[in-house]
Image (cartoon, rainbow, N blue to C red; front, side):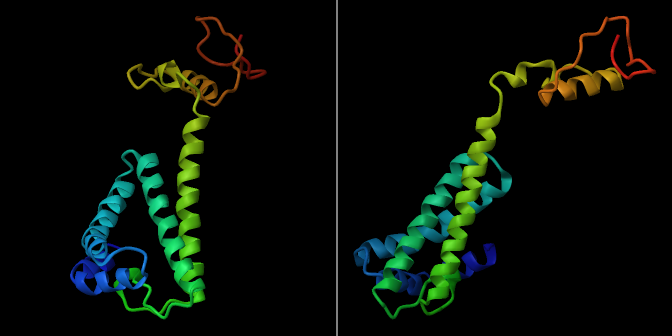
Length: 174
């Protein structure tokens, strides 16, 4: 992706013509889009790779992909004989272009929804529990197993502080 975007940035004038051929924005706006979009895509791609504020950047990528899909679908339905402008190469706009953009948009949407869903599943205050506290040292394997069970929502029977391991007969804490 980086190599493709780099080659695209080296030929911004032809990309501006491709953006303008969609007849959705003025020629001046096409120049602005052509000179900023490749670099915005590179930065967003890098932010996704490092995973910092993933939900925000995934949402931004999804919004951009929805915009691309809308523009490509509109041009296809209007039977415009233009180059797609995708991936920095001259490629005629076809039905497969729309399908490919739809697949990429679906993947971006899944990434955004999955990230939001994963965050929503978290239990409020879970990081304050001893199970996930990175400052409390873990002393024994049974303590580690108990903490892991609590972190996954499995109830663990209460045990006395004198007991250091589960019962060898039944496996329960006594």
